[in-house]
Image (cartoon, rainbow over all chains, first blue to last red; front, side):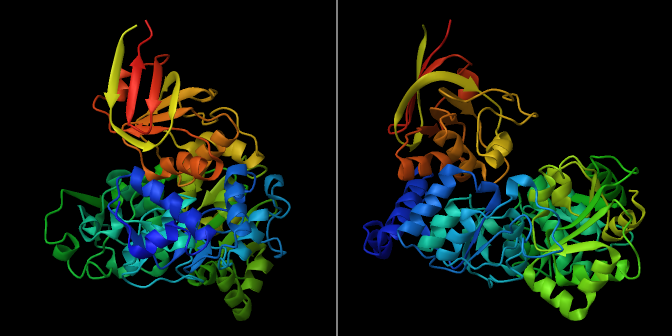
Length: 402
Length: 148
């Protein structure tokens, strides 16, 4: 593998022992995978911290870097903790996540941006077009590649960390122009397209595309930041999609032809109302109807607009006794919601607005055994749940019935 | 005992000999999630996987590729650290998520778990459970001694 002069110096320890150790690891990974060279990255995002707090291997590596006085060399953010312990709105924290994690303190020492969100591209670590990144978190990777036109592969946990310390990752995949072209044309032809359809479209796309890049036409009109976030997160869960194009909307697809790099699609698929209906049923692995214990929304973190829209639905209403309504977002949106008085509306309705990780909370007890409803395609893939749009989720929280 | 030598690519160095355990694609995070949360890993806990209830300890793990979570490598690292991981890994095609486990185990903890892929014969067809394998991650070779 070719290394630049600076990379050789990093490997030889000229920039200190932390960078030397991180570089040694990246070079072994790159050599093993037959990479031609490394690529400088301008940002990193670290995967889940609290799930790994008892992993001796992971914690030991982070501790080693702290001991060596490492600091991240590029803007590096971090995924959410299960629930912000300083927020009284947070739900009771499951036993496995109680007490402080040594990792949170280590990350502060490494100068990681303490934004604790899975949507760092909206809060705390916003990339621009064309930047190469070394990001973990599949829902964020698909967003920055597609919507922003930054260049990132799904970095494995551990590689995100050593990339942050060196500002380098392995050159390959979506760092390379020709690997960013569309492969499958997906025509969305539904009678009335709603913002809620995006998570369902993404869920279906992930299954049929696998690792291929879809070019999605027919959704331009309703493609808000929130919709695109939700579609990508679902697609990156059911499949290994890391990028999509939307002609006339995403930056590398000014036209359909350009989205395919002036080539032809290898496959053309259509999404109609029938596909949406069938996919929705599939997303509800816990079955439809019946009683609901928890309604959980905001995976990935709700945007401020999504928080505002759920607050409008909740205004003057009351969540049914015995039912929990969890709304997860980042700290920035919580501050805005407090400022606008909508945090108060949610609180008065009996909902919990907090910064945390629905995925982490919902997969451990006591919450794992409860009957859950969500508007998240990602949650509906990873855990048995009932799928519903935001409006349907609110209705279920108020009535206790799916 | 019939013997075959397969040649391919060595992705992580070291030499190991042990009994083959052949399996379908694995999501290592799903395989060990409860153990990762509790701090003690033992066997594969993924009820949907054919290796459910089995331990990889002392085995040479043969499977096509890893799937799922980007925490797969760090989960495999933890299994290796706690002494319940495989002695070596053979894949049809190894990806960066999986490789992170053995590479970080070597660089940070000096534990060698050789990894070999892209062999000149399909390991999923040639290797059977219980075959005795010697994996050389430096040269990228696998010696297969078929169990009668």
